[in-house]
Image (cartoon, rainbow, N blue to C red; front, side, top):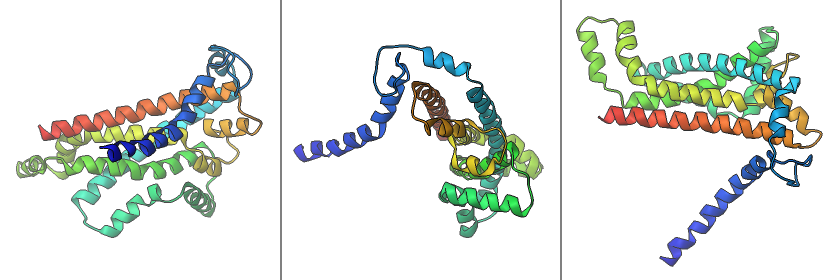
Length: 259
């Protein structure tokens, strides 16, 4: 029993190492003083100043445009990819290729996309970032939807086809409703990934107005301020909310499938 309790020491030490800096960041975002390192009392003024910063607000708008656009692309293509891999092919090579955007380092994927855009002579802008994020997040959506698809009841699809329904009608009326929790969870994950992604956006945005992560990067080059802490705390809240919602939807879908 003593040995088993000692195992909790590195366990909790790892959690403290990972999450203590995040906790400090959130606390310092409510700092009344100008310093990002010395707490001088509770205040919400830095959150109020965010709304008055045009550069930050433009970054928020651009980030939301990219996140929503890439989420739509990733959700549609990722869902179709998952259904195709699970229902119409059993190729291990295609399975590996479909996961490559999620496995490759962001830097490698960003450089590859930049070279590809140059080859097809595509002018860089927000739309090039949307396409890049869609490719990046598509693999994650496909993985989530395929996990949900593995627990789907195939007998309903077979019954639909036996009754004369075509592949499209079967997919829309039988398969899609069963996959809905997984699709929504994958979409939330794709939205979160695009919201926080920096490297791919930095390489593929060109001279367009920057997204929020790029704005934050340009700001911290001159030092961390409580305003940046407040902005990071808001992004943290949005990301956690989306991830938790996705997990809850996945669990709901699994429980319904078991019932």
